[in-house]
Length: 79
Image 1: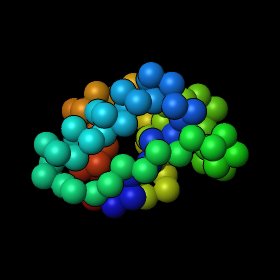
Image 2 (image 1 turned 135 degrees about the vertical axis):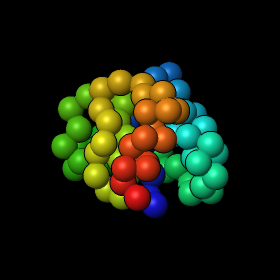
Image 3 (image 1 turned 60 degrees about the vertical axis):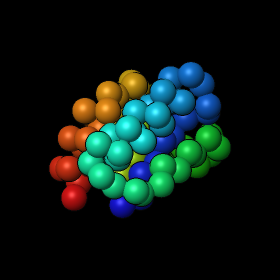
């Protein structure tokens, strides 16, 4: 699964990245978390508010720092 955190690198973006890594750890997955900070790349996703989380190229969360549990749920739904 391709997991991407979209955001310019602000504290909220870093927290979302940490929560995504924790969700993966709790699920027993070793997939890498890619950080997308280039604003042009973020705009290609149609994201208007960061941070955002994309799974396999599809934005599933935007504009908030999701908890590890919320991310786990999103990943499980996407599988």
